[in-house]
Length: 303
Image 1 (cartoon, one colour):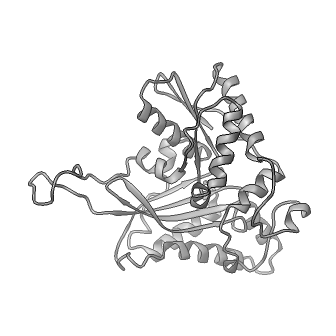
Image 2 (cartoon, rainbow, N blue to C red):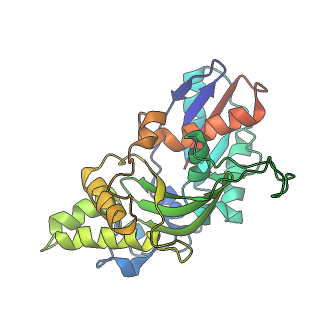
Image 3 (cartoon, rainbow, N blue to C red):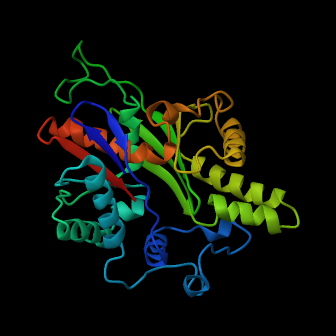
């Protein structure tokens, strides 16, 4: 969770780890591609793992406690009442889920916080915050007009790496519009699961190959020309600095894209010194830019 303050500065406030019910809820909303990995690794308690891989979880509202903790942390840090919040998530499936939107809205409404009943994908907010946007004329200018200009679309690869999951996506950016063409969400490829694999596998190279195979699958795009370059690689999440992940990612980028050996992997760092807060910072900036000075304080929660 981050805040964008009235004086134009950011404040990174808190990271809150949810309990088993929250984790089960979030895992249940993901699209797990189990065929990519060789083992059905489950990083949680046996009570949860007996239902692995998780599909749906029946619960009152597992988001309420964690959102309540984040709002309390924000109010304590900023010494003010939080009235508005924007929530960003790293999984497209969650954004498209009516249930997820309802649970977020209900949890914040119970706290007296307005969320405008919306969810945004972290990548679609992080890209413009980093200046990733084609220069295009206004829609009403016709191509035959001498003032018409439209930059070609560009490829953006994103990876959110945490203790419990790896989420990767291939995006096309066209005149400021981000479209995801491929994605992968996996708890089995997160930092902790990969560490466990390396420690227990007879041949740890199998773990690395599974990880790289998953990344390769995300880079596939039938619309992509053989020599099309990747314009940006955005890496965020609490384990974004993991050496093993970065080595694997660099190798896959080099294999899949002509410029993959040289593309910058540190772009997010200039925006957010702690990559765990990159998404919430971008969300806070977006809300502030959209609403101007309507509120003294804006903050975001990132699930």
